[in-house]
Length: 517
Image 1 (cartoon, rainbow, N blue to C red):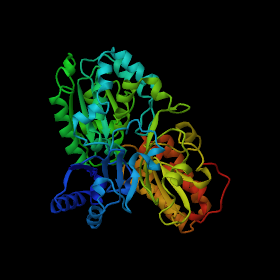
Image 2 (cartoon, rainbow, N blue to C red):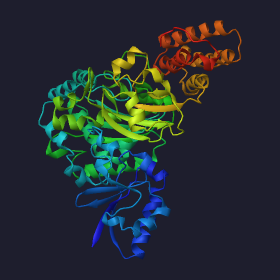
Image 3 (cartoon, rainbow, N blue to C red):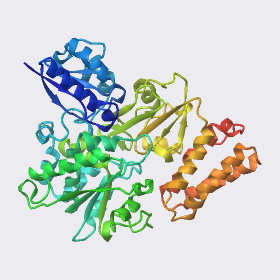
């Protein structure tokens, strides 16, 4: 009798020993003469349980984890491959509370099967969105996306349908679809997980975007530190071409769409869309002046859709299930779901996909389990290194673009990094300036010079030098950077600084003020 088990190949799982566990399981099975079919699936995002082995049974898949090489012999002694009990067994995977309480739309397939098994992708609903899109007129595809309420998931939250409409309406014989996969925000990994664990959904989303706006060429601008994603994407592109989902005459139509992966330059600023385009053209990654917008004059001066990985990966389900289905999730103007990534000082880290509206308290305690150290959580930073620090007093506000904007915070890419009460928020604020000074493209003065001056002013405050005068100077500097910077790099760097100053003045040696964040 043969048994079927799943061992992940996601980079997080590999870093925790998944390949070594796979080899140990293979050796043990051979020694015991047990026939195993081992599927190398993607991760479901339960990083606190990785490497997670799943066993297929008549009642569903059972989860065992985190499994180390030293656990393998005992698992075989307990006949885990037959679904029998063991201390590492968490029951049916789908019944684990972490997964059960999610709303998985974009990540519906992640971790279910071999990421490069095209038949599995089709059996799980893959390419249905593309098949529907082929039967629609381009403006009908754009309207469907617009009506869904989907906004850019890369951080800017700009309505996707409006961007597509602009490219659709701009006359040009050549147009491009560019996927921003230069995922550089701290505590974020949802882009990587899509590319490694469900690459066909990104390909499908980009082909649909091409259909919608009349583009026949796409580029995935991939973070240079993602070698595993590079291999998976290139293989997935080859497989999609072989089966007619990419390349010439897609699905028997006259529509052609080519797709290429380009490795990024290794600079944080290249995550900004115009800097990305400069880099993609082979130039130094520096921010462009706007206007013109990339939707009108983008890559090589042609109309270009620049969307984040998660934005494009959300398109297939919208074209499959319809705009209303997607828009029924969420709250207010924040429609659909957001892949939220938990990182930092938490007991349980990993990816969660939830409809907009869940609170930070629910995320960091119900899902994250509180701090890994057992100490009180002092603050969380949401939205990467340019996101504001949010104190415990605001943990009950919902994840919603407009709600966050009211307190000068950003949802961003959905990354959440938690800090316990031992953190020095003045050091964190200084690091924000330091990060900007290192990563700035240098094109505009407020960002290039302001970040360095910011570090100096914080050092003076911490040293007790003319504290009141320097606090005012720091706030004036922040205002200049917000108002005068060319892009979000300099314009948002003050967000974490001022939030730390407002909510944690004692860390700077200041008395608490009534200043609102």
